[in-house]
Length: 221
Image (cartoon, rainbow, N blue to C red; front, side, top):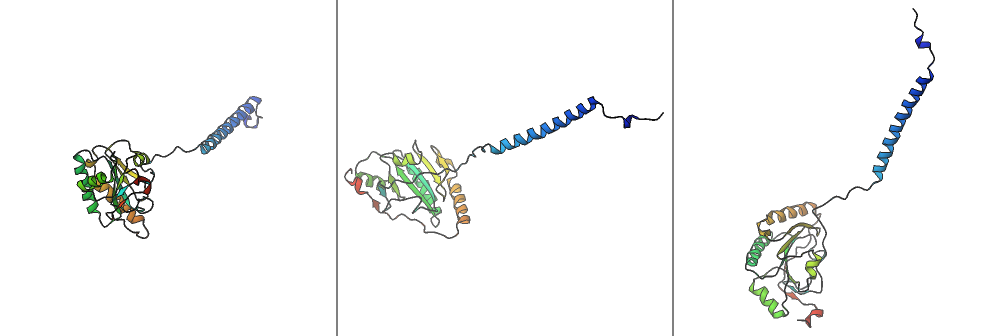
């Protein structure tokens, strides 16, 4: 018996099924394209980073062991900087200064600086000088008697310690118990990174042992 099924014209039902299938596939393709297009328009989620920028030291403040107000974007540019916020009110601060002095000596020939931000209510230059001498502080020290320095560096408790990389970004932030951290290792890593990135070496800052008292504050002290 001869088969004529291949020669039969497509029925109306068959044409409807084929048309529905084609429309369905086209709808899937269009939907996928629209979803991809909409996702390309949506903003990417912000990426979190350990590094964050900080403000600079205020100029109208008293400095010891520096004859001029320091700036992390000027004299301390391309330096790894440790900023230690303290009140010099406990004997443990002596241990902190000793540890910081050891690290400063370790990297003496490299662009590394320790800066002390002293939060104090003392109102006499002589009293402040006596504090610096009695504690044997050789680091540049800024007197933060108004809390402006701590506000600029987002510090709200004492002691606190910040490590800034050579781009003036916070690479590490410590509070109570910071002396247990590998501070020397952090500084060494940042110095190696700066050495690999720096095209030409700049001047290395060294404390000059002098003091700076802005004229606007002489009357107050």
